[in-house]
Image (cartoon, rainbow over all chains, first blue to last red; front, side, top):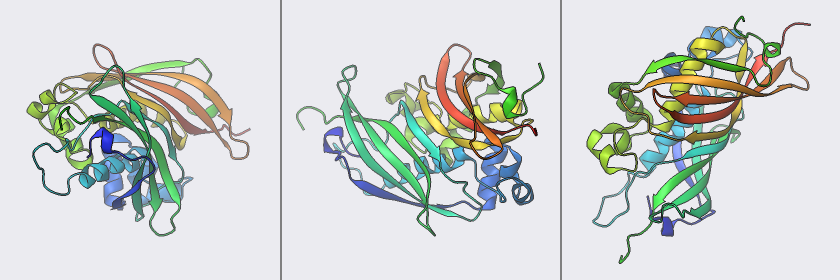
Length: 157
Length: 148
């Protein structure tokens, strides 16, 4: 991560890919979204979707996984900003197309807006446009606007 | 009333209350390890030093637990056809080990699909722990329409 002051709007960052194997889709769905079309290849094929598809909460949780991983590269030095942060929520999440078993999605994040917070002078709010695209076709599969608190550079640095 | 199964069973202003989801430290750490391995979701001491003031579940985990309660209560029996998305989600309070979550849902809008035999049901999902509202989600699932 960077300090809030260092964040540049408009910059799009590729944060990596994730392959939605049937095993991963079913494992997530058994815990959090046990609807038939997320639970087995057979039930998925018999459904309106025509295939086993991932839970929408799975496809968006993978964005978080890749975001965290993308912040972990490089060594920490004294005075570096923290690599983690909190969020008040998100907006405009669209599950554009069903994510079928075997698909690989490529995820990205792009800073849209930086907002100063009167109530929390040591933090800023960063809004980002986050996307997942089918690696094979480039088709948009999911997007949302994320909101994250980022610390401001301590005074004197 | 009977549990809703089709688009026509949902009406603006309708409310549903259900769910009982005990949140464990093990589950918070297991979800975070896979999807959100930030220190405040993995470790009590790191959580105390963070803005969350203690070990707390990933917001994506809170949404996923809400989904599980909804499937167990409603969608599991209904002709649900996936979701269009989430207009807004607010993570209002940290969800901690020992919390017990429950749901209150209100139907905000019902809109038939212009062509397909489904309809959009815009809903607000309020997630409470034993004390207070912790998360509020506005989401629009689709349901099959009843055969004419």
